Amino acid sequence: MTPFEGTGSPVMQRIRAYFAPVDRAAQHATIFDPAQSGDFPLDAVPAPWVDLGWISGFARTSATAISALRTGAPASVKMQARTEVEATVKFAFESWGKLQVSLAAGTQQMNLLATQSGAAAAGSGGAAQPAVPLGSGSSATTLNVGATAQFAPGDLVAVDVDYVAGTTGFVGSGVSGAYLKSGLNDVDYIRRVTLNVGTVQSINSGVLTLSKPLLAGAPVAGMKVSSVLGFCDREGSSFFQEWSALFVGEGQQGERVIWHYPRLQGMAGIAEVSSKSAGGYESVRLAGSFRAMPVTDPVDGERVVCFRSYLTRSV
Image (cartoon, rainbow, N blue to C red):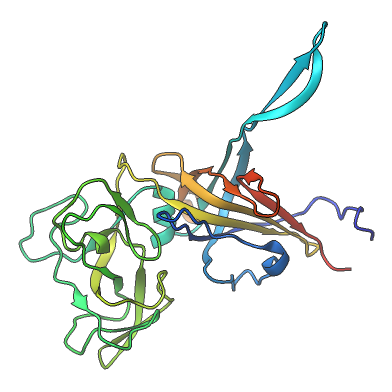
C-alpha cells in the first residue's frame, strides 16, 4: 500500500473521550502530539489526560464562514477568505462520575460536603463539617489524615486549600472549579467547587489510599480533606468551565482517528438523554454540547480550533 492509497472508511464501534486541564489564569491548554503519543493504549492514556470512558452520539459541526471576494464586471470570484471560525461538538457520556457530570454541566459543580449538625438548608449544601488537615507524607494517591479522622473505604473526599475571605478570581487546584467576581466568607468554598476529588480505596494507620491519583497531583501545604456525599450542578450559574479534549476512534483494520480540541467550553444548558434498555428500564446519559475556542499552532502561527489526525495501520 502506498501512502496515497486508502484503506476504506474507518469502521468504528465506539468513540472514547479523554479530557485534560486548561490553565485558565495563564490561558494554557493541554496539547496532544499525535506523532509522539497517537498510538497510546486506550486504557492507559498519557498524563495529564484523564480517561472518561466511552461516549455515544459523537457529532462535530463546523460553522466556519467562507466568503468570496469578487472583482470585475461582471463580478467573478478573485479569492476566498475565512471570515468567521466556529466549531462545536456534542455527545453523551456512557457513564456518570465526578468529571463526567461536571463536564456535562459546563459550569460550577458543587461537591456536597458533609454538613454540620443543625446547619441551615441550602440547595447546594449547608455549612460543612470542619475539614481534616493533611499530615506529612501525603501524595497524589495517599492522604495522611491521622488515626482519629472518620473516613471509611468507599468514601468520596475533596482535597484542597481553605478559601481566604475576600479572594477573587479563579479558584480550585489542578482545574479551575469556579471564578469569583466578589469575595465570600465560606472557608470551605474551594473544597465545594474543586475537581480534586478521589475515592477512598483502603485505610491503614490513618492513611487513606485513593483508587486513582488526584487531578492536581501531590497535595501542597495547607490542603485539607472534606467528606463528600455527592455532587450538585446548578442550571443558570455564570461560570464557564474549560477543558482540553481528545476523542479517539479505532477502526477494525487497526487505523485510528483522533480529534483533539485544545479548548472546549460548554455551550448548552444542563441536559440528559434517555433510552429504553433491557427489561423496560430507562437508561439516562449525560448530554454535553461544547464550543471550540482557538489556540495558536507554533508550527506556523495559524489559529485553529481542532486538530484531526489519522493514523494508518502499519503494513
